[in-house]
Amino acid sequence: VVGVEVPKLKMNNGKEMPALALGTYLGFGQDGPVKSENNMLRDAVIHALNVGYRHIDTAAIYETEAEIGEALKMKLDNGELKREDLFITTKLWNTHHKREQVSEALKESLKKLGLDYVDLYLVHWPMGLNEDYTESDTDYMDTWRGMEDVHRLGLAKSIGVSNFNKEQLTRLLREGSIKPSALQIEVHPQIIQKELVGFAESEGIVVMGYSPFGSLVMRFGMLFPGPKPTDPVLVDIAKKYGKTTPQVVLRWLVDRNIVPVPKSVNPKRLEENINIFDFKLTEEDIEKINEYNSNTRYTLPSFWQDHPYYPFEKIENPAANPFVKQE
Ligand code: NDP
Image (cartoon, rainbow, N blue to C red; front, side, top):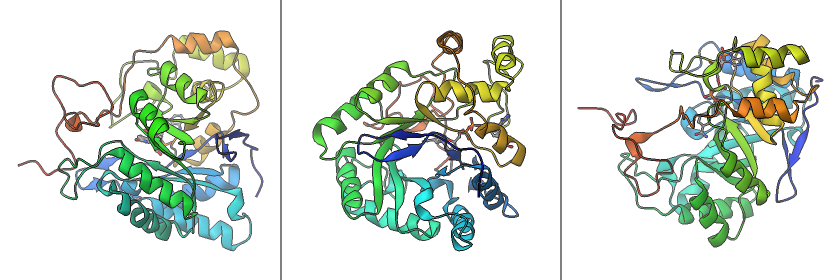
């Protein structure tokens, strides 16, 4: 298999992460995670591997691990790829935060993926929940001990966190035995995360940026305020390099040493999103895009905002909890 050669970033444990990851979250509907139909995701992953993607991002809660596993198995069994060519990231869900639950949860994910290790295991959120989704008081430091256990067992080559704020990350660095190697957070032109990215970088922690397109694309079936693909500033930059505006936004992340995690199940867009390693933005272009910052999050689980480990600023009217059936 050939395709685009994606560069790699060095993590603080000496291992390397491919500088672009494929997102595989298909959304959340009335009946839980949206299901892939007609092998849509399996075929998208196969196409992604064909055109050069080597890093796949998933999570237990997405319920996409099994289908990703099918695609990986096909490429590994036919000899086109070797396990060491791939970088697979998955995440621990909030209902498995007790130390001893971490290895159970990862083993479950590995079974679905058909792998005997993942390259990166992330704590999805700092807040623990009980099985019935009521708040659990499990300290994320206990969860981190469980993460260290699976690292020692060789089930996860690197470990890290997602959606932790600076204070939480600081505590992890101070009290943990193993430093997190990666931090996955929301990053796009409307939430540029300058401070948190700078802090992570100073600790050698590689940042992965989720929802990288921000307002460029539809979310929850809606368009939100913020730059669109026809935005004149972005179009100007794109023209200069002969690229599209989504490519410019992905490159803006790459040029800030952030690993973008764009999701696509469309063959053309999968190719568009990986064709970003043959140009580089100037400092001035980067600054122009930084100016769109409005600290807007699309992933804001305000229904958990009374949890002691909720990482974000509280809002006045929290949303209804989609994980709990409303009376
Ligand atoms: P993205 O910013 O990746 O946007 C995805 C949307 O953009 C899809 O509708 C896709 O449609 C469309 N799209 C993809 N490429 C293009 C393009 N070149 N031009 C126009 N439209 C395009 O958002 P996500 O929120 O999905 O985030 C990406 C990934 O990040 C997730 O899949 C998941 O892996 C991760 N994530 C992690 C979270 C966490 O808590 N850690 C939270 C949220 C996301 P189509 O498929 O039809 O191309």
